[in-house]
Length: 246
Image (cartoon, rainbow, N blue to C red):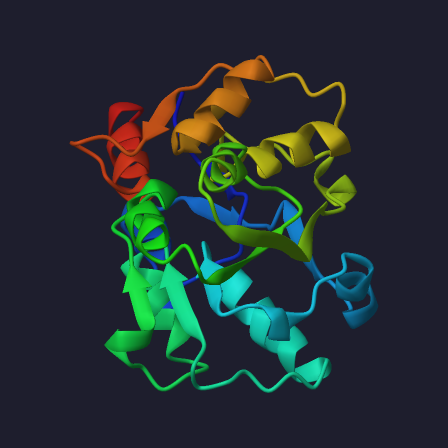
């Protein structure tokens, strides 16, 4: 089956430099971008209902760029002036770099992990007298609170934004050859919008182990699994797959 139409379950990023746009041009195919999920920020009253006072914490644990955005958004709206003494622990270098959007970067204030949350556990163990705040969405991997609960520390989770399913009803009669997913929430959104979804001849592409697991649990047949040593990016995997279907 020749591939003509692909749906990416996220908005387009990267502008004209997007590898997906280059793929459209080079392979003469159509790729649509549609966010399957929406992020809704918490209000100051939502934070207060969780009995969270930002001034009670000395270290903020950032596990995503969105958690950075919503922490500083709410700090401003709640008139909390983040002190220059505040320390930050970032799960990845990407998050640490993004943090510069809000603070003057000082290495003495920032601890950076390599990839997973467990990478920053050694820092936490060395600073057990600190008070840790974990800003997150309403969806959080169970292993994160499990790891923190095993440590002899004061910590709290603050739900600063929530994931909602987008309304995809306008896609009901549109056919795609490949559906591309990057998170378990996007898989859930598909079935929330289309409870009787029948894959038929539609190919499914997933990025990451959690997304792959969610897709398999939903009964989907997975044709493209990313990342792999050969294809670290989704665009590379799609290009290779399209080439096999000429």
